[in-house]
Amino acid sequence: MSAGADLERGIARWLSARLAGDAPVEVGELRRIPGGASRETYRFLAKLPEREQRLVLRRDPASSLIETERRVEFAAYSAFHGTSVPVPRPIGLETDPQWLGSPFFVMEEIEGCETAIRKLTEEPWRNHVEKLGLQKWRILGDIAGADPAAIGLADALEPVAPADCWRRELDRWERVIDEDELAAQPIVRAAIRKLRRKPPPPTTRVVVVHGDYRSGNFLFDRDGEIRGILDWEMCHLGDPLEDLAWAMNPIWSAGDAAHPGRLIERERALQVWERASDLRVDREAFAWWELFSSVKGQAIWISSSKEYASGRSTEPILLFAGWMCTDLQDRILVEAMAPRDGAGA
Amino acid sequence: MRPPVDQALRTLAGTLLTPTAGGAEYAEATAQMIGILLLFAATEAERAAEVRETENRAIRELFTEAWMRVPDPGLRARLEEEAERSDASRLVADLDAANDRLKYLLIELHTLVEKDDSLADLDRAIWKLYRVFAEGRALPPVPF
Image (cartoon, rainbow over all chains, first blue to last red; front, side):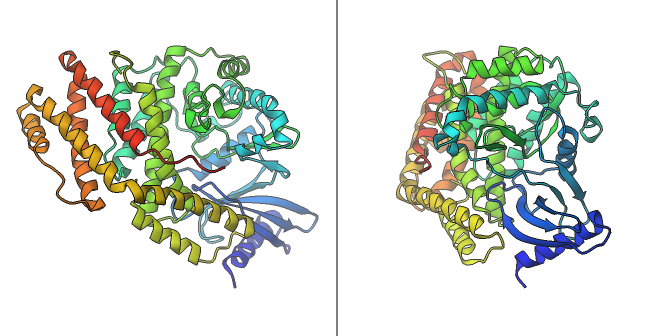
């Protein structure tokens, strides 16, 4: 029997036990969704006793792009479902490896959508660039404006003091570089030293940080509606500027930094975010978090190199990140930090 | 680039030779990604030795200017020693080993330079060097 058929059988057994009171369930049309090296993601059709339903499975692979928390991701979907932040409806989380060999969770599939930003150059999506941009930054503002306790997410996330947000994240990603670098990294090390020399002020509000909010991680339909924010595995509590800076990193803009994520103009995006979050962007603090976002990015790409080189994963996306993204991020860092005619970095 | 091209090509070959449970869409996306990676590998194969030799030479030239101005005697001695070396081998693995050794030493030097205003000209020279690294290793744009 093929690996795909084995997986279908395992999913059917689990659905039967967890959702159908042990009644027979059939699973078919299993297809792996490309991308996403930190999880294996599949779509499938479940034939339950009362209905058919299209679902998505997210399963831990043997290795991942970064160390991630499956519980955190599921908790985030559960917390935001039904709010102004669109997410797929979560169905169930399973941590016992007896079913599929590793922990996983299941959620409803949001059909008829894309995630690839290159679609924005094609019909009909190219007509919705402004609409998508306004939604993208508004939704991020809504995430930052949400009360973690009120939506039931505070207990699932490690607490952090406002003054410690920057240090915790910088320590975390520097540690990743220390552990995973396959070559000397003088450019990102210079960035880390600069960040430590002059940290940002404490945040005025500790919020839910998605951790990987960017173009490519949201579902949008042919009418230009954002229907789901995905990939919450790096969700944590922290400074709201962290998410904003990550989403605006030039690496997501294909060379057009004036239109972060290849959508609306940067200043307009910031205004939309401020209105939605009811927070003001401290520009000096934001500059810190923007430089940090490139350090975080470089740490993730370096980690992907290590995973691929070690053989723990053979997903080509990891090699792409390790080769292409480290290159791009180094150039972004040099542009951000190199002295201009005598000024210091 | 790490992992190195030869190792990556072997792993990519294994991926192409191994049946996948992902379905046609996943297989097609994987094949496209591998195509892009092969283009990167071709770029790297052509320039690998030159890029590393250029970087190693530039770092040693910087060390030649810098070592006399470094107050720390241990660092000064290591900088002087590296400044006087040259690359004897053109094997990429050997050039990489030298490149790493030079860059780790460069990190030490830059850390010290940043703390000393009298070495501001060295700071600017090091940033020019970082630009050489970043631009010299730039990969072609992704073809989509």
